[in-house]
Image 1 (tube, rainbow, N blue to C red):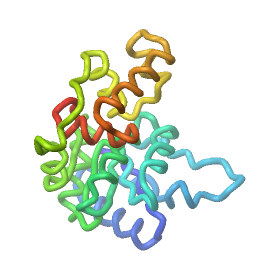
Image 2: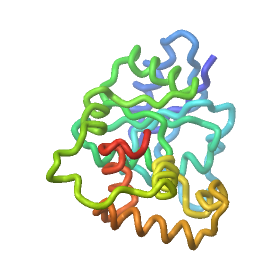
Image 3: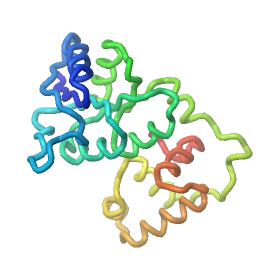
Image 4: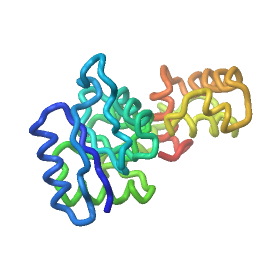
Length: 209
Protein backbone atom coordinates (compact mmCIF):
# COMPACT_ATOMS: atom_id res chain seq x y z
CA UNK A 1 0.00 0.00 0.00
CA UNK A 2 1.25 3.49 -0.86
CA UNK A 3 0.65 5.91 2.03
CA UNK A 4 -0.43 9.38 0.91
CA UNK A 5 -0.79 12.70 2.73
CA UNK A 6 -3.23 15.21 1.17
CA UNK A 7 -2.42 18.92 1.65
CA UNK A 8 -4.69 21.77 0.53
CA UNK A 9 -6.01 24.92 2.15
CA UNK A 10 -9.71 24.42 1.41
CA UNK A 11 -11.40 21.57 3.33
CA UNK A 12 -13.57 20.69 0.34
CA UNK A 13 -10.50 20.28 -1.87
CA UNK A 14 -8.79 18.11 0.73
CA UNK A 15 -11.85 15.92 1.11
CA UNK A 16 -12.28 15.59 -2.65
CA UNK A 17 -8.66 14.60 -3.24
CA UNK A 18 -8.74 12.15 -0.33
CA UNK A 19 -11.91 10.55 -1.67
CA UNK A 20 -10.44 10.22 -5.17
CA UNK A 21 -7.29 8.57 -3.88
CA UNK A 22 -8.97 6.36 -1.29
CA UNK A 23 -11.09 4.81 -4.01
CA UNK A 24 -8.01 3.61 -5.89
CA UNK A 25 -6.53 0.17 -5.13
CA UNK A 26 -3.17 0.07 -3.36
CA UNK A 27 -3.42 3.62 -1.96
CA UNK A 28 -4.29 4.69 1.58
CA UNK A 29 -4.72 8.33 2.68
CA UNK A 30 -3.00 8.66 6.07
CA UNK A 31 -3.98 12.28 6.80
CA UNK A 32 -5.31 15.58 5.43
CA UNK A 33 -3.78 18.97 6.28
CA UNK A 34 -4.09 22.63 5.22
CA UNK A 35 -1.10 23.96 3.32
CA UNK A 36 1.89 25.11 5.42
CA UNK A 37 1.03 28.79 4.89
CA UNK A 38 -2.08 28.21 7.03
CA UNK A 39 -0.69 26.09 9.86
CA UNK A 40 -1.39 27.70 13.28
CA UNK A 41 1.37 30.07 14.39
CA UNK A 42 3.17 29.20 17.58
CA UNK A 43 2.28 25.51 17.39
CA UNK A 44 4.58 22.62 16.40
CA UNK A 45 4.48 21.71 12.72
CA UNK A 46 2.42 18.59 11.99
CA UNK A 47 4.36 15.32 11.78
CA UNK A 48 3.98 15.11 8.01
CA UNK A 49 6.77 12.56 7.68
CA UNK A 50 4.86 10.02 9.74
CA UNK A 51 4.21 6.94 7.61
CA UNK A 52 4.01 9.10 4.48
CA UNK A 53 5.44 8.02 1.14
CA UNK A 54 3.77 10.55 -1.18
CA UNK A 55 2.40 14.05 -0.49
CA UNK A 56 -0.25 15.46 -2.84
CA UNK A 57 -0.46 19.24 -2.40
CA UNK A 58 -2.59 21.97 -3.95
CA UNK A 59 -0.41 24.88 -2.74
CA UNK A 60 -1.64 28.40 -2.11
CA UNK A 61 1.51 29.89 -3.65
CA UNK A 62 4.07 27.39 -4.88
CA UNK A 63 7.68 26.47 -4.21
CA UNK A 64 7.83 27.80 -0.64
CA UNK A 65 5.25 25.30 0.57
CA UNK A 66 6.85 22.49 -1.41
CA UNK A 67 10.23 23.26 0.14
CA UNK A 68 8.75 23.34 3.64
CA UNK A 69 7.04 19.98 3.19
CA UNK A 70 10.20 18.50 1.67
CA UNK A 71 12.18 19.63 4.72
CA UNK A 72 9.63 18.12 7.13
CA UNK A 73 9.27 14.86 5.19
CA UNK A 74 12.54 14.38 3.27
CA UNK A 75 11.74 10.77 2.39
CA UNK A 76 8.32 11.60 0.90
CA UNK A 77 7.80 12.36 -2.79
CA UNK A 78 5.68 15.43 -3.52
CA UNK A 79 3.12 15.86 -6.28
CA UNK A 80 1.98 19.45 -6.90
CA UNK A 81 -1.43 20.27 -8.36
CA UNK A 82 -1.64 23.54 -10.24
CA UNK A 83 -2.83 25.37 -13.35
CA UNK A 84 -1.77 24.28 -16.79
CA UNK A 85 -0.16 26.88 -19.02
CA UNK A 86 2.04 28.02 -16.14
CA UNK A 87 5.52 26.83 -17.06
CA UNK A 88 7.17 29.06 -14.45
CA UNK A 89 5.07 27.53 -11.68
CA UNK A 90 6.07 24.05 -12.84
CA UNK A 91 9.78 24.90 -12.81
CA UNK A 92 9.39 26.56 -9.40
CA UNK A 93 7.70 23.45 -8.01
CA UNK A 94 10.39 21.14 -9.36
CA UNK A 95 13.12 23.39 -8.01
CA UNK A 96 11.35 23.18 -4.65
CA UNK A 97 11.86 19.37 -4.77
CA UNK A 98 8.53 18.24 -6.18
CA UNK A 99 8.46 14.89 -8.00
CA UNK A 100 5.31 15.56 -10.00
CA UNK A 101 3.06 18.27 -11.41
CA UNK A 102 -0.54 17.64 -12.50
CA UNK A 103 -3.56 19.82 -13.29
CA UNK A 104 -5.93 20.56 -10.42
CA UNK A 105 -8.76 18.79 -12.24
CA UNK A 106 -6.83 15.52 -12.67
CA UNK A 107 -9.09 12.49 -12.51
CA UNK A 108 -8.72 9.83 -9.84
CA UNK A 109 -7.05 7.30 -12.14
CA UNK A 110 -4.54 9.90 -13.40
CA UNK A 111 -3.75 11.05 -9.88
CA UNK A 112 -3.38 7.48 -8.62
CA UNK A 113 -1.07 6.61 -11.52
CA UNK A 114 1.10 9.62 -10.66
CA UNK A 115 1.21 8.58 -6.99
CA UNK A 116 2.35 5.08 -7.90
CA UNK A 117 4.91 6.43 -10.38
CA UNK A 118 6.61 8.87 -8.00
CA UNK A 119 6.53 6.26 -5.23
CA UNK A 120 8.58 4.04 -7.54
CA UNK A 121 11.10 6.83 -8.21
CA UNK A 122 9.82 8.45 -11.41
CA UNK A 123 9.11 12.13 -12.09
CA UNK A 124 5.62 12.81 -13.45
CA UNK A 125 4.65 15.95 -15.43
CA UNK A 126 1.40 16.56 -17.30
CA UNK A 127 2.18 15.90 -20.96
CA UNK A 128 1.37 19.32 -22.45
CA UNK A 129 3.53 21.09 -19.86
CA UNK A 130 6.31 18.56 -20.30
CA UNK A 131 6.25 19.12 -24.04
CA UNK A 132 6.67 22.88 -23.64
CA UNK A 133 9.37 22.47 -21.01
CA UNK A 134 11.65 20.32 -23.14
CA UNK A 135 10.91 21.93 -26.52
CA UNK A 136 14.05 23.40 -28.11
CA UNK A 137 14.45 27.15 -27.85
CA UNK A 138 14.29 29.18 -31.05
CA UNK A 139 17.69 30.18 -32.39
CA UNK A 140 16.97 33.78 -31.37
CA UNK A 141 16.73 32.74 -27.70
CA UNK A 142 19.76 30.51 -27.46
CA UNK A 143 22.53 33.09 -27.02
CA UNK A 144 25.34 32.87 -24.50
CA UNK A 145 28.31 30.57 -24.23
CA UNK A 146 28.04 26.86 -23.57
CA UNK A 147 28.32 25.71 -19.97
CA UNK A 148 31.43 23.92 -18.80
CA UNK A 149 31.08 20.30 -17.60
CA UNK A 150 31.31 21.49 -13.98
CA UNK A 151 28.68 24.17 -14.55
CA UNK A 152 26.38 21.54 -16.01
CA UNK A 153 26.86 19.43 -12.89
CA UNK A 154 26.00 22.40 -10.70
CA UNK A 155 22.94 23.28 -12.81
CA UNK A 156 21.69 19.68 -12.60
CA UNK A 157 21.94 19.78 -8.80
CA UNK A 158 20.18 23.16 -8.74
CA UNK A 159 17.39 21.52 -10.76
CA UNK A 160 17.06 18.96 -7.96
CA UNK A 161 16.40 21.81 -5.54
CA UNK A 162 19.68 21.44 -3.63
CA UNK A 163 21.11 24.46 -1.76
CA UNK A 164 24.68 25.61 -2.33
CA UNK A 165 26.00 23.90 0.80
CA UNK A 166 24.68 20.51 -0.28
CA UNK A 167 25.93 21.01 -3.85
CA UNK A 168 29.38 21.75 -2.44
CA UNK A 169 29.32 18.53 -0.41
CA UNK A 170 28.13 16.48 -3.39
CA UNK A 171 30.89 17.79 -5.66
CA UNK A 172 33.64 18.00 -3.05
CA UNK A 173 34.21 21.72 -3.57
CA UNK A 174 33.80 24.79 -1.37
CA UNK A 175 30.51 26.65 -1.00
CA UNK A 176 32.27 29.77 -2.28
CA UNK A 177 33.19 27.89 -5.48
CA UNK A 178 29.58 26.80 -5.90
CA UNK A 179 28.45 30.43 -5.64
CA UNK A 180 30.99 31.32 -8.32
CA UNK A 181 29.62 28.59 -10.61
CA UNK A 182 26.02 29.67 -9.98
CA UNK A 183 26.86 33.26 -10.91
CA UNK A 184 28.61 32.03 -14.06
CA UNK A 185 25.62 29.86 -15.01
CA UNK A 186 23.18 32.74 -14.62
CA UNK A 187 25.42 34.95 -16.73
CA UNK A 188 25.97 32.41 -19.52
CA UNK A 189 22.27 31.55 -19.74
CA UNK A 190 21.07 35.13 -19.36
CA UNK A 191 18.93 34.07 -16.38
CA UNK A 192 17.79 36.34 -13.57
CA UNK A 193 17.32 33.55 -11.02
CA UNK A 194 18.13 29.91 -10.29
CA UNK A 195 14.58 28.94 -11.30
CA UNK A 196 14.91 30.67 -14.66
CA UNK A 197 18.32 29.03 -15.19
CA UNK A 198 16.73 25.61 -14.65
CA UNK A 199 13.93 26.45 -17.09
CA UNK A 200 16.36 27.60 -19.77
CA UNK A 201 18.70 24.69 -19.09
CA UNK A 202 15.85 22.18 -19.42
CA UNK A 203 14.72 23.65 -22.71
CA UNK A 204 18.28 23.56 -24.04
CA UNK A 205 18.77 19.97 -22.94
CA UNK A 206 21.42 20.89 -20.35
CA UNK A 207 19.56 19.32 -17.41
CA UNK A 208 17.20 16.40 -16.90
CA UNK A 209 14.11 17.01 -14.77
